[in-house]
Length: 162
Image 1 (cartoon, rainbow, N blue to C red):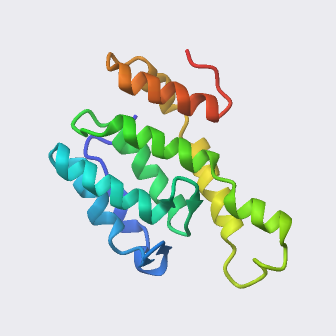
Image 2: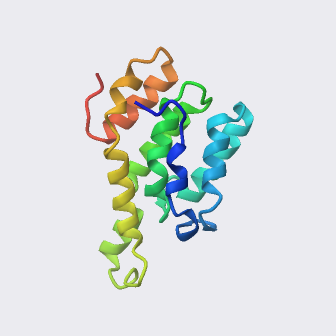
Image 3: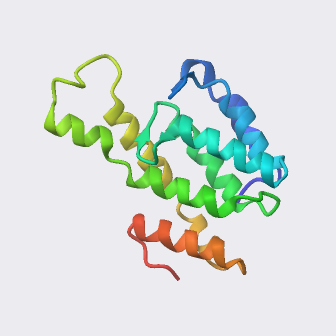
């Protein structure tokens, strides 16, 4: 179950030391906050920007993705958030991401450098899997968009929807 006030743990993440698709991940807390407390237009725009930063094109994860996932799970469960189905689909995209692993498998020397995007991908996928207990709660919601997105995410995670 999410905290009564979502995103309280954001201050514990060293965002300035993490990277997203634009460079420093320092904008991620503001984007998450905009998703959490913004009106529908603000939340949708912030989620779109966040998606491009942590799961570009819907399949390229970044270093900051794994650190962002727990907050996405919180927001997906927060009733005041206006774009919950889209958050669930973003979590599905992150769980499906295999771009860097595919490149590493085909061209191992290409990714042989200090940063390891294939490890970022695995960490992000693990983060999505580690919070999947929320699926049961989300499946019980009355909103058909949320239950549909939850079903899609559950299938990606290898779980049968309830």
